[in-house]
Image 1 (tube, one colour):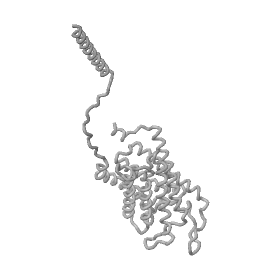
Image 2 (image 1 turned 180 degrees about the vertical axis):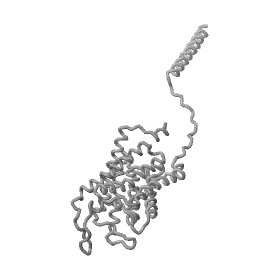
Image 3 (image 1 turned 90 degrees about the vertical axis):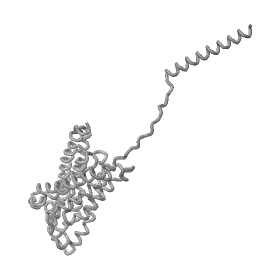
Image 4 (image 1 turned 60 degrees about the vertical axis):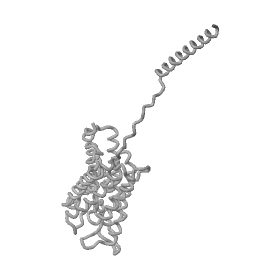
Length: 322
């Protein structure tokens, strides 16, 4: 029955609410995260040899926006849907048996739709900036693109090859998936007390990955986060070579490969440790509680004892009379 539930879970009202929670959380996450890319003013410029000081200064606020957004949203929606907010995390939890294939597929669709809506909402928020000049320390820069700053799409550093980007995306997602497994799933995790602290660790894992990956891949580690802005840019008429790039696959293959590897590591090395071995309790003698049958037996014994005592008293009187 349990195996059947892993493969086929009935579509209940609870599952529909959970899917909507994933949709809503992803919408907010993409809006906040990619919104920080737009709001900080200019692209991270790199030609493989140099990065502007302004670009370096933007890494931390963008990383914090993504990390804190996940922290807040996992706390906010975790009790409804589990707070996956990432198709790679959903896949990882499915591989370790904590999410059914039915739920995982529905979450996947909800997450992609939420990411697209989040990008559209961001575009609606900043579309009036299109065509205005940017300003740098040396004066006016290039005009703002349509849509503004391409809504924070992920882009591979021109100085890197796709294989480099794959490794970056793999390692960032591996950090995230292992953090989820070891803080949420593992029964002995120190984060499982009350209040639950797992969202804090997960948020910091996302932030750390962004601090390292932003200059190189833009930091995907979340196929939905990559998909939403790319599709919105396509709707805006941005060429596919910019919106998706020839390296689009690294933002999918990297995270999903990391999800599988994290699940294998957990199941092979840490899952058995999570199962607490319960020592058998010493055998106890059954406690006989008074019941109707015992009361009847006690009453009969009392009557017999009374008869014996009366007969003995009668015999004593007869002896005395004699």
